[in-house]
Amino acid sequence: MTYDDLIPLIRKLAIEAGEKIMEIYNADDFDVKVKSDDSPVTEADEAADAIISAGLRAAFPDVTLVTEEQSDSHSEMADTFLIVDPLDGTKEFINRRGDFTVNIALVENGVPTRGVVYAPAKNRMFFTQADGQTVEETGAFDPATVGDVAPISVADSDNAALMVVASKSHRDQATDDYINKYAVKDMKSAGSSLKFCLIATGEADIYPRLGRTMEWDTAAGHAVLLGAGGQVVRFDDHTPLTYGKEGYANTFFIAYAPGVELKDA
Image (tube, rainbow, N blue to C red; front, side, top):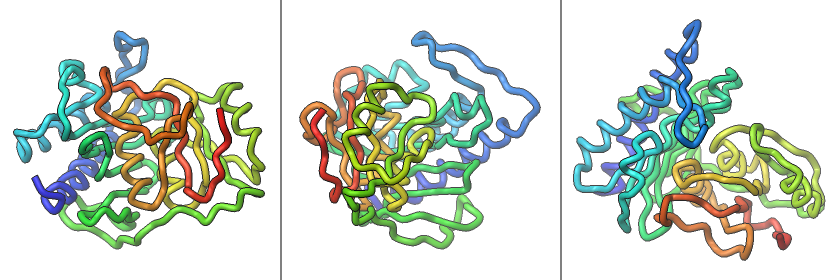
């Protein structure tokens, strides 16, 4: 597997999965089930997962694939693996708020090195190119042909007037208490991995997450942010957030533009 082979494929699969998601999203009704961890899953999650998994396994049969919707993959461990959240922001999807994304990433030695985040209801797509630079694509999102792309990069942050982005569905007092340690110009709310992308484009400076997430929730957004010059660190000690952990569960973390002067927990 080379980056030149990987990037066009994950872009294509993200778009195809997004098309299926939007077909279900725009229907009069759709099925919602509850998984063993009490989180919701829809037919869109499952349909998108089937499209992405089939495409990745056909192209890269020897690369470990970890995907949220296939619990048997959660015990797989490897230094290099593909990790997928076919529909991140299921609650946003169910409530028809639009802030949901398709996420596919490659992890190498604990670091998400390449990835794609596609928000089909928002008409926004971000991906790392083969050289590692993150771009935002605009246009018709044709699976077969890449549209216009522009490199993106994090903001030159002003620590006297920071833009903070936080979760729509998982905001709590602990998060607010931490945010209050900063000089905040304004706040944005966003769902799913879009929060990483808003930092990558310079639309926000910092995203603290003091709550449970899994590696498939964050890997693609993390890769997009790294390719735009940003960082993601553990909340407790500010060391880099790593991947391939037992059970694929994350610690609390902070995603940010490197100009931000981080405050201690």
